[in-house]
Amino acid sequence: MDLDVFVAAHEAEWRRLETLLRRRRLTGPEADELVSLYQRATTHLSLISSAAPDPQLIGRLTRLVARARSKVTAPRRARARARDLTGFLAHDFPGALYRTRTWWAPTAVASLLVAALIGWWVATHPEVRSAIAAPAELRELTRPGGDYEAYYSSHPATSFAAQVWTNNAQAAALCLVLGAFLCLPVVAVLLLNMVNIGVGIGLMASAGRLDTFLGLLVPHGLLELTAVFVAAGTGLRLGWTVIDPGPRRRRDALAQEGRAALGMALGLALVLLVSGVIEAFVTPSDLPTWARITIGAAAEAAFLVYVYAVGGRAARAGRTGDLTADETGSGVPVAT
Image (tube, rainbow, N blue to C red):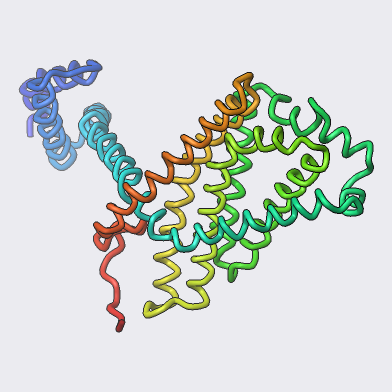
């Protein structure tokens, strides 16, 4: 190959490709031209590398081809990521929520009963309150503008929202991850959360300020606690899979439920982000209590509609939150 003749014959194409790569937006014909020139430059690079390996020219074409490849494939990757995210939020996540409702709904009811019982116990037994803290400390906690109320306005709203979201997402992730250890750690994490809520209810009720406490807790707590209950229920399901995998091999069952739990963690992070924003901007706001509670109730209602309407439709279509058969490969059939 005469390298000088080859370069002279194709220099205009390479320069045109460089020109197209510098443009931020391309028309339809220009995009087609870019793909065609990219394919031709790839062929030129292959020919030069095999027939007339000139290091300087190879380096130039390698960089040109790499830039063109990035330009050609990046929009496809972006569209694929957008389709994946849309499919996850529209089908996989709600389908997984609906499929696991028989675990997290009873978990929610049992947990709230425990919190209510603890609250009643603390509110009606002075000796229990005295064991929690000294009378002066309890007065500081429950007085108007005290620690319980100041907690929600003690930091700038934006940083507080980020802190709340991080803490809640970590708690949800713990419930999901620890579920594999035969359910017991999930029960412990859930019980700790219910004790904290029950003690707060009991202390504020004993001070005659239960309405204030619920006005602070309910706006964000409805959605936040629902997300925690979903995580706990999913973790319990994962732990029970270790004990009783059903007709599936234990390894396959645990892999399937674990993949679904991982997807659940990503979805719940978004749910907790919403509750964190409500907790940071709505809970400590000057809105009347009824307005703050209405906002929280609307967010909770929207989530439940998402679960039972969107999730029910997705589950009936076979979307469970796990990867598809094409994504996981063929499995070994089992008897049912």
